[in-house]
Length: 327
Ligand code: UDP
Ligand code: MG
Image 1: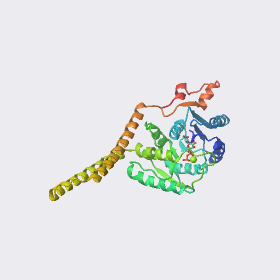
Image 2 (image 1 turned 45 degrees about the vertical axis):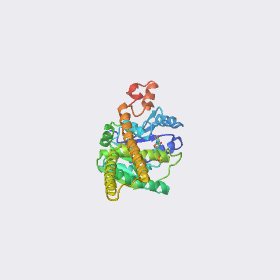
Image 3 (image 1 turned 135 degrees about the vertical axis):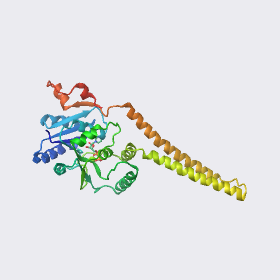
Image 4 (image 1 turned 30 degrees about the vertical axis):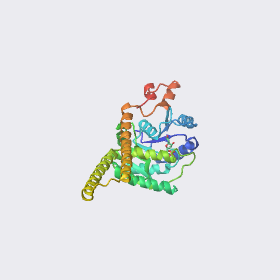
């Protein structure tokens, strides 16, 4: 059986993909294990797709899937995991921010019986603001989430076949990998490596995307924000009750006293704010339910190495239906 699969989502990585591939192959070959590399072209607009086709043409250990448009890294990772056939699967980025030299170490730890091996980066070389915000986010999330997510523990990890099958068994369309990996459990080990800057090309994550990713993470893994809304409502109700008693007592003791415009305005504004926010939270969940209810596939495949092989006249196991859309 094939021992190792490397899954690499790529979006506009034309500039680094060649260097990445060379580095990866040179570290994998000395390990003496049989391996395959599963590239997923996430609808790149540059020549990434063409590069992958060439790589697959030159080396039978390389396989690829191309999406019809950009579906996002989560979808690309899912497609890669579905493609993979190895006993151990390593997920990594194409931009050399996940150093290939660490893969043999991960495989070694896997041989010691760990089902998940996480390479956790530190935050060396990152802006102070971003580091601070991330720290704050993780501290917040740890309280509001049912699963544990760890700062710096991203998608650079090894999963055993068993773990991959468990990940693939989860049917949700809103996929938040960090949560999913933590949710499936299994024996996990992690080690830290020094953060590296991307080798070439640009990051696809701006501040806005990160914020949305953060909200996604918070919401997609539990219903605690709804619980928070209930708690806030109860506390507000209690304080309103106390305040009402206080007013009544005041009127009884000191006679009728009409002013209170400021209090009234403050209360109205604060309450409407809280109501709107709560409505937003509920709306998010309803939106998610709507999204899940549509049961759309996670991505649409334009082409794979196998579909191309069959186009050239070799019959292949991949039927058109399977190659076209997997859900
Ligand atoms: N990626 C992807 N689809 C996207 C965005 C990113 O497949 O829509 C891939 C990208 O090619 C890279 C990895 O995900 O291999 C991480 O992306 P990036 O380096 O831009 O993120 P960062 O390292 O800045 O968090
Ligand atoms: Mg990167």
